[in-house]
Length: 138
Image (cartoon, rainbow, N blue to C red; front, side):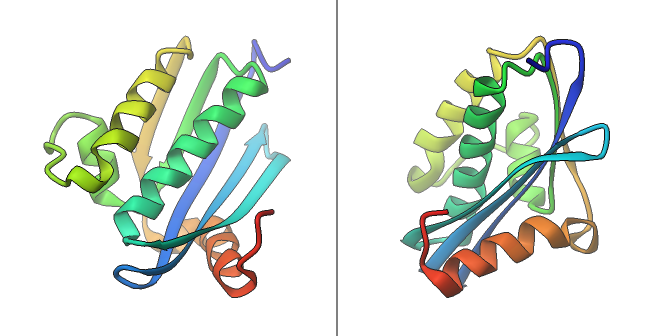
């Protein structure tokens, strides 16, 4: 479906309290054309757990879309540096999600995970916060 195009993915996880009610937001687009938005309540979790859950959901969706190349943008410096191998994953709470993400990335020909300022991630942030507000599944 998107074999020859790069898919851009903005992800965010939000938690009211840490841990507390949490949600994820994912915005997927190609050539500035929106393809899919995900806003999902994930229960009482930590902020880092929510960030990784957003990444896993995004990668699964990109594989369903048959994307060969993806660019993931996140305002979580911790997630970006752990995924690049610069930081170790110490939290038992997110090790499984980290390993899931690493395995999912093997399904792409090319990928990048880039840290961006929070201001550049407002769309995914709004989706994550909306999920908490609604406690919705989509």
